[in-house]
Image (cartoon, rainbow, N blue to C red):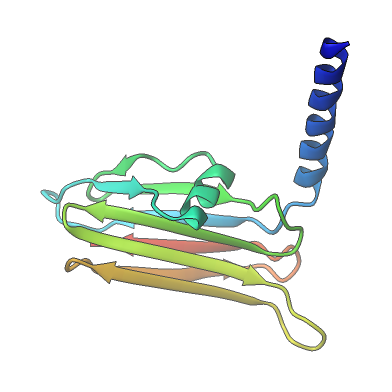
Length: 149
């Protein structure tokens, strides 16, 4: 009897996971660029907030743990909790320098158009930038480039 309950629970969770995936929000393609000098320390991917944890969970492939100077790291984040919105929050550190990046998509309501937003916060002398490089009005996906020096 206990095995039957466990099996039913696993089937229910599996069905839920499949249905949630079918209603995923628009994907965001993230490109992180480490623009530091060749002797700069690696940019370390760091998770502190809940939004950063969710971003990591929804990322495919998973972001690299570190990015050396002059290199890039690319991944896609798709929110499986909502069919209409998506966001990504990431943080990178190079020694005492830190960059917090955020991007989001919110669908338009009524005659309001959809919006894609971006933000980059720096600390410790870091120079951080976020640039949306592509938006798609059909599937609402977008590409964003985060840079750090």
